[in-house]
Image (cartoon, rainbow, N blue to C red; front, side, top):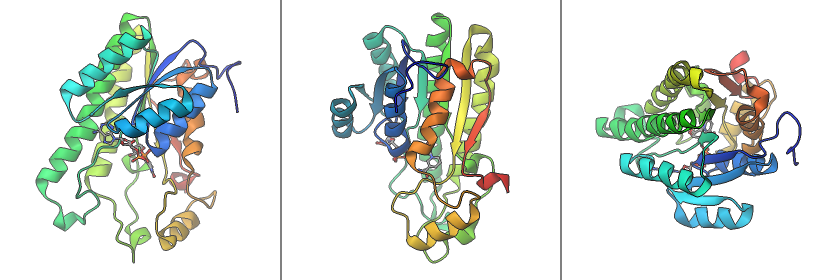
Length: 258
Ligand SMILES: NC(=O)c1ccc[n+]([C@@H]2O[C@H](COP(=O)([O-])OP(=O)(O)OC[C@H]3O[C@@H](n4cnc5c(N)ncnc54)[C@H](O)[C@@H]3O)[C@@H](O)[C@H]2O)c1
Protein backbone atom coordinates (compact mmCIF):
# COMPACT_ATOMS: atom_id res chain seq x y z
CA UNK A 1 0.00 0.00 0.00
CA UNK A 2 1.39 3.44 -0.90
CA UNK A 3 1.01 6.16 1.72
CA UNK A 4 3.31 8.77 0.20
CA UNK A 5 0.84 11.60 0.70
CA UNK A 6 -0.85 12.77 3.89
CA UNK A 7 0.38 12.78 7.47
CA UNK A 8 2.41 9.55 7.18
CA UNK A 9 4.30 10.67 4.09
CA UNK A 10 8.10 10.39 4.24
CA UNK A 11 8.54 11.96 0.82
CA UNK A 12 11.82 13.89 0.62
CA UNK A 13 13.31 12.07 3.61
CA UNK A 14 16.40 9.86 3.52
CA UNK A 15 16.29 6.85 5.83
CA UNK A 16 19.15 4.54 6.82
CA UNK A 17 17.94 1.10 7.96
CA UNK A 18 20.57 -0.91 9.83
CA UNK A 19 19.85 -4.64 9.75
CA UNK A 20 17.89 -3.87 6.60
CA UNK A 21 18.18 -7.43 5.26
CA UNK A 22 16.42 -8.95 8.27
CA UNK A 23 12.79 -9.83 8.85
CA UNK A 24 11.76 -6.56 10.47
CA UNK A 25 14.30 -4.39 8.62
CA UNK A 26 13.26 -5.53 5.13
CA UNK A 27 9.54 -5.09 5.89
CA UNK A 28 10.33 -1.64 7.31
CA UNK A 29 12.24 -0.74 4.13
CA UNK A 30 9.28 -1.76 1.93
CA UNK A 31 6.97 0.42 4.02
CA UNK A 32 9.36 3.39 4.07
CA UNK A 33 9.79 3.19 0.28
CA UNK A 34 5.97 3.03 0.01
CA UNK A 35 5.73 6.18 2.12
CA UNK A 36 8.01 8.02 -0.32
CA UNK A 37 11.35 7.85 1.53
CA UNK A 38 14.72 7.27 -0.15
CA UNK A 39 16.18 4.34 1.71
CA UNK A 40 19.70 3.09 2.32
CA UNK A 41 19.90 -0.41 3.77
CA UNK A 42 22.93 -1.28 5.92
CA UNK A 43 23.76 -4.83 6.90
CA UNK A 44 26.65 -7.22 7.46
CA UNK A 45 25.25 -9.52 4.74
CA UNK A 46 26.45 -8.03 1.45
CA UNK A 47 24.86 -10.72 -0.74
CA UNK A 48 21.37 -10.22 0.69
CA UNK A 49 21.97 -6.47 0.70
CA UNK A 50 22.61 -6.41 -3.04
CA UNK A 51 19.53 -8.59 -3.68
CA UNK A 52 17.41 -6.28 -1.51
CA UNK A 53 18.75 -3.28 -3.36
CA UNK A 54 17.74 -4.81 -6.70
CA UNK A 55 14.29 -5.80 -5.44
CA UNK A 56 13.33 -2.51 -3.75
CA UNK A 57 15.47 0.16 -5.41
CA UNK A 58 17.08 1.06 -2.07
CA UNK A 59 20.79 1.74 -1.81
CA UNK A 60 23.07 -0.59 0.19
CA UNK A 61 26.01 0.05 2.50
CA UNK A 62 27.87 -2.70 4.35
CA UNK A 63 27.84 -2.43 8.13
CA UNK A 64 29.25 -4.44 11.00
CA UNK A 65 27.54 -2.83 13.96
CA UNK A 66 30.01 -4.56 16.29
CA UNK A 67 32.90 -2.55 14.88
CA UNK A 68 33.36 1.11 15.75
CA UNK A 69 35.25 1.74 12.51
CA UNK A 70 32.49 0.11 10.43
CA UNK A 71 29.71 2.06 12.18
CA UNK A 72 31.55 5.33 11.56
CA UNK A 73 32.29 4.41 7.92
CA UNK A 74 28.68 3.35 7.29
CA UNK A 75 27.28 6.63 8.57
CA UNK A 76 29.82 8.58 6.51
CA UNK A 77 29.07 6.58 3.37
CA UNK A 78 25.28 6.86 3.80
CA UNK A 79 25.44 10.62 4.32
CA UNK A 80 27.90 10.89 1.42
CA UNK A 81 25.47 9.10 -0.90
CA UNK A 82 22.32 10.99 0.12
CA UNK A 83 23.75 14.33 1.23
CA UNK A 84 21.72 14.17 4.46
CA UNK A 85 20.11 11.82 6.96
CA UNK A 86 16.55 12.28 8.21
CA UNK A 87 15.72 8.88 9.67
CA UNK A 88 17.75 6.07 11.24
CA UNK A 89 16.10 2.72 11.95
CA UNK A 90 18.33 0.39 13.95
CA UNK A 91 17.12 -3.16 13.37
CA UNK A 92 20.52 -4.91 13.30
CA UNK A 93 20.61 -8.10 15.36
CA UNK A 94 24.20 -9.27 15.83
CA UNK A 95 24.59 -12.43 17.90
CA UNK A 96 27.37 -14.90 18.62
CA UNK A 97 27.24 -18.53 17.43
CA UNK A 98 26.32 -19.72 20.93
CA UNK A 99 23.37 -17.31 21.15
CA UNK A 100 20.35 -19.07 22.62
CA UNK A 101 22.30 -21.34 24.99
CA UNK A 102 20.86 -22.01 28.43
CA UNK A 103 21.93 -19.50 31.08
CA UNK A 104 24.06 -22.00 33.03
CA UNK A 105 26.05 -22.92 29.90
CA UNK A 106 26.65 -19.37 28.81
CA UNK A 107 30.24 -18.09 28.79
CA UNK A 108 30.78 -14.63 30.23
CA UNK A 109 32.71 -13.71 27.07
CA UNK A 110 29.56 -14.43 25.08
CA UNK A 111 27.54 -11.98 27.20
CA UNK A 112 30.27 -9.36 26.71
CA UNK A 113 30.39 -9.83 22.93
CA UNK A 114 26.64 -9.71 22.44
CA UNK A 115 26.12 -6.69 24.66
CA UNK A 116 29.04 -4.90 23.05
CA UNK A 117 27.95 -5.42 19.46
CA UNK A 118 24.17 -5.07 19.83
CA UNK A 119 23.86 -2.47 22.58
CA UNK A 120 27.10 -0.50 22.30
CA UNK A 121 27.13 -0.63 18.49
CA UNK A 122 23.51 0.50 18.33
CA UNK A 123 24.23 3.30 20.76
CA UNK A 124 27.19 4.53 18.70
CA UNK A 125 25.19 4.42 15.46
CA UNK A 126 22.30 6.31 17.09
CA UNK A 127 24.59 8.91 18.62
CA UNK A 128 26.38 9.58 15.35
CA UNK A 129 23.02 9.82 13.55
CA UNK A 130 21.83 12.33 16.17
CA UNK A 131 24.93 14.46 15.56
CA UNK A 132 24.33 14.35 11.80
CA UNK A 133 20.66 15.29 12.22
CA UNK A 134 21.53 18.05 14.68
CA UNK A 135 23.76 19.61 12.03
CA UNK A 136 20.93 19.63 9.46
CA UNK A 137 18.06 20.78 11.68
CA UNK A 138 16.50 17.54 12.94
CA UNK A 139 15.47 13.98 12.25
CA UNK A 140 14.12 10.78 13.76
CA UNK A 141 16.03 7.87 15.29
CA UNK A 142 14.10 4.63 15.78
CA UNK A 143 15.58 1.69 17.69
CA UNK A 144 13.96 -1.71 17.38
CA UNK A 145 13.90 -2.91 20.99
CA UNK A 146 11.62 -5.68 22.32
CA UNK A 147 8.91 -6.44 24.84
CA UNK A 148 11.72 -8.16 26.78
CA UNK A 149 13.14 -4.74 27.55
CA UNK A 150 9.88 -4.16 29.43
CA UNK A 151 8.76 -7.52 30.86
CA UNK A 152 10.54 -10.69 31.93
CA UNK A 153 10.33 -13.97 29.99
CA UNK A 154 7.75 -16.66 30.60
CA UNK A 155 10.01 -19.73 30.43
CA UNK A 156 7.03 -22.10 30.20
CA UNK A 157 6.64 -20.95 26.58
CA UNK A 158 9.88 -22.74 25.68
CA UNK A 159 9.18 -26.01 27.46
CA UNK A 160 9.84 -29.08 25.28
CA UNK A 161 11.75 -27.01 22.67
CA UNK A 162 15.44 -26.20 22.33
CA UNK A 163 14.61 -22.49 22.45
CA UNK A 164 15.21 -20.11 25.34
CA UNK A 165 15.62 -16.39 25.90
CA UNK A 166 19.32 -15.53 26.44
CA UNK A 167 19.90 -13.40 29.55
CA UNK A 168 21.80 -10.82 27.53
CA UNK A 169 18.72 -10.11 25.42
CA UNK A 170 16.58 -8.29 28.04
CA UNK A 171 19.71 -6.50 29.28
CA UNK A 172 20.39 -5.24 25.75
CA UNK A 173 16.79 -4.27 25.08
CA UNK A 174 16.25 -2.47 28.41
CA UNK A 175 19.55 -0.68 27.71
CA UNK A 176 18.25 0.41 24.32
CA UNK A 177 15.17 1.90 25.97
CA UNK A 178 17.43 3.70 28.43
CA UNK A 179 19.65 5.25 25.77
CA UNK A 180 16.54 6.15 23.73
CA UNK A 181 15.38 8.36 26.61
CA UNK A 182 18.89 9.73 27.16
CA UNK A 183 19.37 10.71 23.51
CA UNK A 184 15.83 12.12 23.34
CA UNK A 185 16.63 14.43 26.25
CA UNK A 186 20.03 15.35 24.87
CA UNK A 187 19.03 16.09 21.25
CA UNK A 188 15.39 17.25 21.57
CA UNK A 189 16.48 20.88 21.51
CA UNK A 190 17.91 20.34 18.03
CA UNK A 191 14.75 18.86 16.52
CA UNK A 192 16.06 15.30 16.74
CA UNK A 193 13.46 12.81 17.98
CA UNK A 194 14.59 9.46 19.40
CA UNK A 195 12.08 6.66 19.96
CA UNK A 196 11.93 2.89 20.17
CA UNK A 197 9.58 0.25 18.79
CA UNK A 198 9.16 -2.90 20.88
CA UNK A 199 7.74 -5.79 18.91
CA UNK A 200 6.43 -9.00 20.43
CA UNK A 201 7.53 -12.34 18.96
CA UNK A 202 7.60 -12.52 15.17
CA UNK A 203 6.56 -15.86 13.65
CA UNK A 204 9.56 -17.31 11.90
CA UNK A 205 9.66 -21.10 11.82
CA UNK A 206 9.50 -21.64 15.60
CA UNK A 207 8.32 -25.09 16.83
CA UNK A 208 4.52 -25.51 16.62
CA UNK A 209 4.19 -26.03 20.39
CA UNK A 210 5.89 -22.68 21.03
CA UNK A 211 3.74 -20.86 18.45
CA UNK A 212 0.58 -22.37 19.98
CA UNK A 213 1.49 -21.45 23.55
CA UNK A 214 2.73 -17.97 22.64
CA UNK A 215 -0.35 -17.19 20.52
CA UNK A 216 -2.68 -18.32 23.32
CA UNK A 217 -1.10 -15.71 25.65
CA UNK A 218 -1.59 -12.86 23.16
CA UNK A 219 -4.96 -11.03 23.19
CA UNK A 220 -4.89 -10.95 19.36
CA UNK A 221 -4.21 -14.72 19.43
CA UNK A 222 -1.27 -14.84 17.03
CA UNK A 223 2.42 -14.05 16.74
CA UNK A 224 3.45 -10.93 14.81
CA UNK A 225 4.28 -10.81 11.11
CA UNK A 226 7.28 -8.60 10.21
CA UNK A 227 4.86 -6.22 8.45
CA UNK A 228 2.98 -5.66 11.73
CA UNK A 229 5.95 -3.61 12.91
CA UNK A 230 6.21 -1.47 9.75
CA UNK A 231 3.35 0.92 10.56
CA UNK A 232 5.03 1.95 13.81
CA UNK A 233 8.31 2.55 11.94
CA UNK A 234 6.66 4.75 9.28
CA UNK A 235 4.68 6.60 11.95
CA UNK A 236 7.84 7.42 13.94
CA UNK A 237 9.74 8.34 10.76
CA UNK A 238 7.00 10.69 9.55
CA UNK A 239 5.76 14.06 10.69
CA UNK A 240 2.69 12.31 12.19
CA UNK A 241 4.80 11.64 15.30
CA UNK A 242 6.35 15.13 15.31
CA UNK A 243 5.61 15.73 19.02
CA UNK A 244 6.84 12.30 20.20
CA UNK A 245 10.28 11.63 21.57
CA UNK A 246 11.82 9.38 24.21
CA UNK A 247 8.97 6.87 23.85
CA UNK A 248 8.64 3.14 23.38
CA UNK A 249 5.89 2.05 21.01
CA UNK A 250 4.90 -1.52 21.89
CA UNK A 251 3.62 -3.65 19.00
CA UNK A 252 2.83 -7.00 20.61
CA UNK A 253 -0.79 -7.92 19.93
CA UNK A 254 -1.56 -6.88 23.50
CA UNK A 255 0.80 -9.37 25.22
CA UNK A 256 2.19 -6.87 27.74
CA UNK A 257 -1.26 -5.36 28.37
CA UNK A 258 -2.57 -8.41 30.21
N1 LIG B 1 12.00 -11.43 15.38
C1 LIG B 1 11.44 -11.19 16.54
O1 LIG B 1 10.63 -12.00 17.05
C2 LIG B 1 11.73 -9.90 17.27
C3 LIG B 1 10.87 -9.53 18.32
C4 LIG B 1 11.16 -8.37 19.02
C5 LIG B 1 12.25 -7.61 18.68
N2 LIG B 1 13.06 -8.00 17.66
C6 LIG B 1 14.22 -7.16 17.36
O2 LIG B 1 14.11 -6.66 16.06
C7 LIG B 1 15.41 -6.47 15.51
C8 LIG B 1 15.47 -7.17 14.16
O3 LIG B 1 15.16 -8.54 14.35
P1 LIG B 1 14.82 -9.51 13.14
O4 LIG B 1 13.84 -10.48 13.64
O5 LIG B 1 14.52 -8.71 11.92
O6 LIG B 1 16.22 -10.25 13.01
P2 LIG B 1 16.90 -10.87 11.71
O7 LIG B 1 17.91 -11.84 12.19
O8 LIG B 1 15.86 -11.34 10.75
O9 LIG B 1 17.61 -9.62 11.06
C9 LIG B 1 18.72 -9.01 11.65
C10 LIG B 1 19.61 -8.43 10.58
O10 LIG B 1 20.78 -7.93 11.24
C11 LIG B 1 21.90 -8.26 10.42
N3 LIG B 1 23.11 -8.33 11.25
C12 LIG B 1 23.58 -9.35 12.01
N4 LIG B 1 24.75 -9.03 12.55
C13 LIG B 1 25.05 -7.78 12.12
C14 LIG B 1 26.15 -6.91 12.32
N5 LIG B 1 27.19 -7.27 13.10
N6 LIG B 1 26.12 -5.69 11.74
C15 LIG B 1 25.08 -5.32 10.95
N7 LIG B 1 24.02 -6.11 10.69
C16 LIG B 1 24.00 -7.32 11.28
C17 LIG B 1 21.56 -9.62 9.82
O11 LIG B 1 22.35 -9.90 8.67
C18 LIG B 1 20.08 -9.47 9.53
O12 LIG B 1 19.85 -8.98 8.22
C19 LIG B 1 16.40 -7.06 16.54
O13 LIG B 1 16.94 -6.00 17.28
C20 LIG B 1 15.53 -7.93 17.40
O14 LIG B 1 16.01 -8.01 18.70
C21 LIG B 1 12.82 -9.13 16.94
